[in-house]
Length: 174
Ligand code: HEC
Image (cartoon, rainbow, N blue to C red; front, side):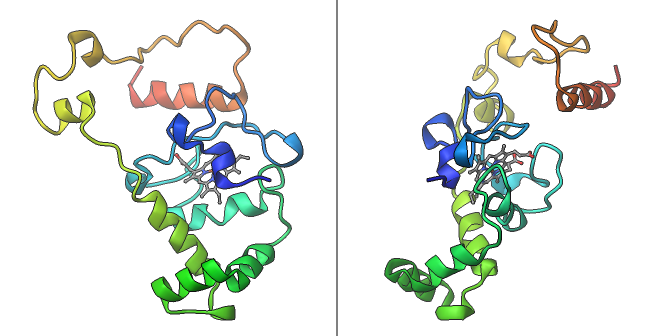
């Protein structure tokens, strides 16, 4: 059975590290791996290519992505939240709605609200950047990781990786 947590594992900071590409239903693979949802509350665009505007919209996609959860429509999800006793109770408590009044709008709001609770904080980087704590990071940690010259390829880069490197170079004015 595939759930969001099959690919966004809490013990891997909600990623599927070390996989290069995520594995969905029937061990089908896509072209990308699962990014973290930690701090996704602050993301202005979602997905590696920014094609989704917010967490509510993003949450519609995995259910019906053919290589992720592989459903044809969202109906099976609605059937569960409209009939399962525990979900019924929780949707009633939170949204004051039951039965067919519960739609994907409420489902995706619930998922997004959960994701927005996953906030990291107080890391050495946070203390240095936001807390002004000068010694929180060592000099080598403060040096930018990414330079203008890409890491020598240990394998052939994918199309997405090449376009990512081009974007990075452009943003760094290389
Ligand atoms: C089969 C593995 C898989 C499953 C299941 C899955 N995801 Fe993902 N998730 C991914 C991959 C791969 C991406 C990146 C896709 C892309 O950028 O095109 C992603 C991207 C995301 C992002 C965007 C993060 C960012 O930095 O832009 C969020 C949020 C997210 N998933 C939440 C969910 C939720 C909520 C569910 C369940 C409803 C879910 N995922 C189910 C693999 C999965």
